[in-house]
Image 1 (cartoon, one colour):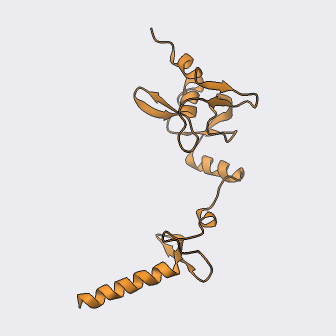
Image 2 (cartoon, helix red, strand yellow):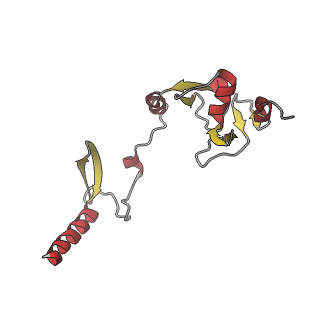
Image 3 (tube, rainbow, N blue to C red):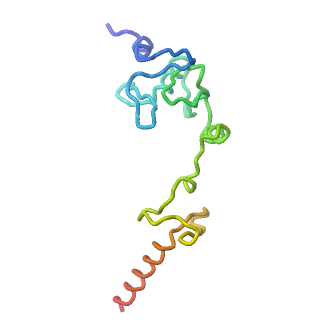
Length: 147
């Protein structure tokens, strides 16, 4: 006879003195625990919330502790994607991609001389001047050869 799901789940938890319950099972590359429920892979903290507090439905299960491996239901709260982003900004965990990217896809450095901004689909995007010039040259050559 199978043990209750909660007992099997708790077998993979380390109860730390810092209050977090660390998931000892599989962790994905972002550090979140994963479990299999009825053949479907689900996030361990989401599963913990479900078995301890109830079904979260379509809401996000967010961490007060900012520890992706934590499955302590007292460290979890429900929120919308917007709530999750606001929580991330409030805690200083948001890193804007432009601030962390130092080069374009072709590894040209993003310097003041080599960078400009344009609006694409209503969003401000950074463009590598060197790539843009190379693309323009290819386009003009294609036009010449097509004539």
